[in-house]
Amino acid sequence: MAEHVRPSTPLRGWAVEIAGGQNRGVRRPELRSPLARAVAPVAAGFGFFAVLGLILWAVAALMAGEQSQSTTFTPDRLPVGNIKNWAKSIDENGPVIFPGLGTTSGERTLVLDHNGENLEKGWVVYYAYPADRSPDCAVEQVTGTSSFTDCEGRTIDVSELAPPANGEYPIIEDRRNLFIDLGDRPGDTVPTGS
Image: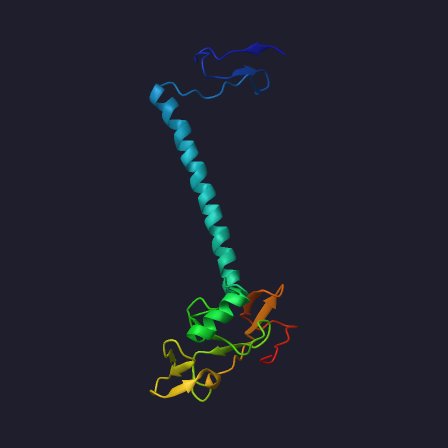
């Protein structure tokens, strides 16, 4: 095959034609100015990270949409702590109020109480409203006691608070660590105020 060069074009930056119209030895485009050689890689990097950011944003948006339909980002149970310390605190200061557990909006407030001398038994969880009223009738604890004042100004005992309806209950692990289970899940058994 005979090679020939177009007579009217310079060799720099142009392809050498082979008979039959095919090109060989095509040179890569060159950035000639120092400014172009400095800016081009930076612009390419910004472009790459912009595209990567859009892809990650789209994946996160897709996953967030699925997540909001199936679950919440709240834990299944609340680690409370050492049973000995909490039993002593409840004996001295009355039941403990845990506001807004198990929800992202703070709708569910729980009250933890302990009865008796046995540290591994007698733990009870209530909702922070009277059993004979709706959740809108929140209670406030009378400081240092097991008494509460409800939305109507009545003074009630901790035992008159609403029992949990969604499977919230205390759990003792390793005979010393207290947790509150925050949700109703298939297969759970809810212990009675043991």
